[in-house]
Length: 73
Image (tube, rainbow, N blue to C red; front, side, top):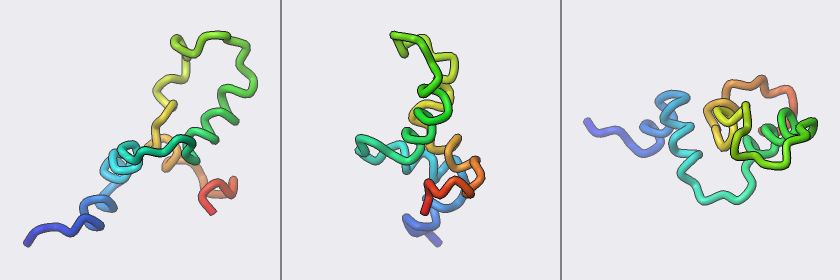
């Protein structure tokens, strides 16, 4: 039996992360959290060489965070 879209999206963190990353969102909760954690204290003028690039635009990283920050509510 084929999976529904819901089942495919919610099967695991990677599938959900891929789905969230594909949405045409200008400012997502994972972007806001990334900026709060990494950009607010950064003095770099150019973000192309960001040492935290693996977290940027990465909903899988955001999904791994504890939900106590209120970002997901």
